[in-house]
Amino acid sequence: EYQVGGSTALLDAIGRTIHKIGNAQKNTADDYRAEKVMFVIITDGEENASREYSADKIKAQIERQQTKYGWEFIFLGANIDAVQTAGRFGIAPDRAVDYLADSAGTELNFKVMSAAVSTFREKGTVDEACFEDIRKDVQRRGKRER
Image 1 (spheres, rainbow, N blue to C red):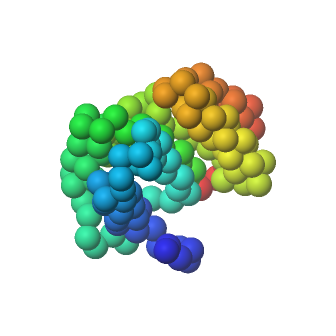
Image 2: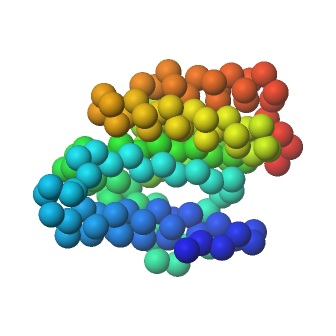
Image 3: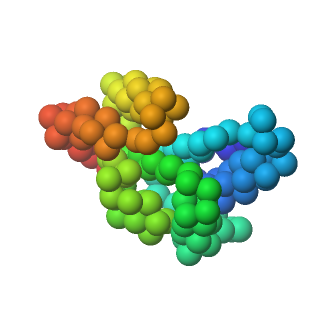
């Protein structure tokens, strides 16, 4: 459980969640184990409070899950450079998207991710084009003041 309040322990949140989902996958009977894992990171701030995990440790975790288990990682970031931040964690640029952290931008995020999850469940892949609506929203309405 993560609390809102100005501090962003982003690395700790990512690391703990990867570990928890990995353990759940490992300890679940084959018949009930998820065939595919999509791990979506949504943040509206820079990392500034993690104590347990470093960017290098997160990158190693992500690369292991991608390579060994085929996990898909998506990074949505507001008030930061999402592509640069995701790249530090080993997430490909086409899986990182800036968004506007207002009500319209957040609503659009969830609409797009709902469609992305449906496609992922059906086809086993994420179509990079699904993020185009979010990118167009940022271009059209512009980045908000940080």
